[in-house]
Amino acid sequence: MARQHHVGGPAPPRGSKGRREGVTWLGGRGLLAARGFGLEGRGGAWRSGAGPGGVGRGRGRRRGQSAGGMRRRGERGDGGGDGAGENGRAEGRTGATRQERGWLAWCPRLRTLLLDLLLVYVSVPFLIRLFPVMATKFVFLNLLAFPFFADLRRPELLLNNTISLYLTTEPGVTVGIWHTVPGSRGAEALGKDQRWYEEALADAHPVIIYLHGNGGTRAASHRVQFLKTMGAADFHILALDYRGYGDSSGHPTESGFTTDVLALYDWAKARSGNSSILFWGHSLGTGIATNAARKLQEERGVQVDAVVLESSYTNIRDAATHVPISTLYRQFPGFEYLILDSLARADMFFRSDENVKVLACPLLILHAEDDTVLPPHLGRKLFEMARSAYKDKTKVKFITFPKKLGLGHDYISFNPELPALVKDFLNIK
Image (cartoon, rainbow, N blue to C red):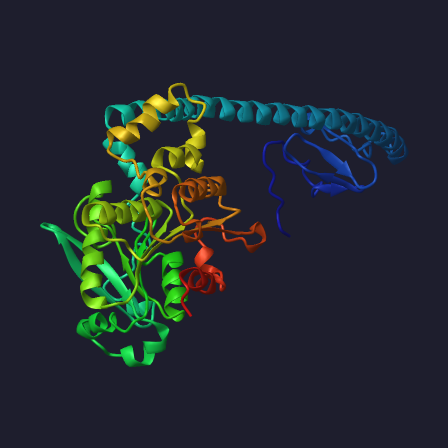
């Protein structure tokens, strides 16, 4: 018969075989468990009640001991419940302490981060004042050359009837240009080289020199959409990246932009015959367009055939006051002195409000009512200045696009009615 193994207490009495009268020897502390009786023996004592004193007395004692054992178990159960509650409360306090320590550990880091951000916030205006060239980085945003992986040498990946070409505008500066021909000549343009495209400029279709806003390249989605929309309306479009933008060389400056535009105008004029040429500026490009048109008129006595200003402003100082990023500093002490005055120190003016007082060519101003970058009241103000200066008031027109269209600052070119509005203004059928 198999032998029972016990650990930590005396062995059961010899011959007991570990079980007698329903009693089982458990060992360890010498606990005796009786099936239904709850007997207990301390220190390994054998108290079954079935000894020489008689089985009856043993059984009686067992009944009493069983009841006592039950009471003791009940008492221990009550005590165990209290212990569990105490353990739960202790664990809760431990968890709260750990959480508190976690927050305390993060507090110094959070405080350091907030102090760093405050230091940067306070430092920027002073750095701009000390180093005005920093202001040009914020205004031109030419380093944000999005879309970042566009191949500017292969416009056919984004557009039909378009080639890429390069023009040297002054020694050491070459600008990249996309030329989109009118949609009516799309089939004819397939497989043609740059020479064919240049000759096509003389086909009597009007030519738009498109001057984009700050940031990005001529491959930005809203600029590509402009080329599609106006190309389908039978315009030639010459879209250039100014010096310092896209794949153009050089560094961006206001005067340099004007040089680039006039060089492209001369190039197009030499190839377009009697075709009309107009400057179309968007956002920052509106100031570039009026600068170029004014210089062309004052220094050469030549008027560009028309100027279209999309999402315009009066001058760069007013624009900087209203663009969303300036909200961070409008209440900053010395905002005008530290930031706005620094624009002039960096040779940035873009004085469209002064330029339109000199121009005599047809002027069309377009603005969306939901433009949150350059509010429409800037465009209206520019229109009123031009209208008061022009002798022929019919040459100046202001068109707004309602909020429900959702065109905002960049998407007027997505409006299918745009080509018809422009052609009507230019008396083109």
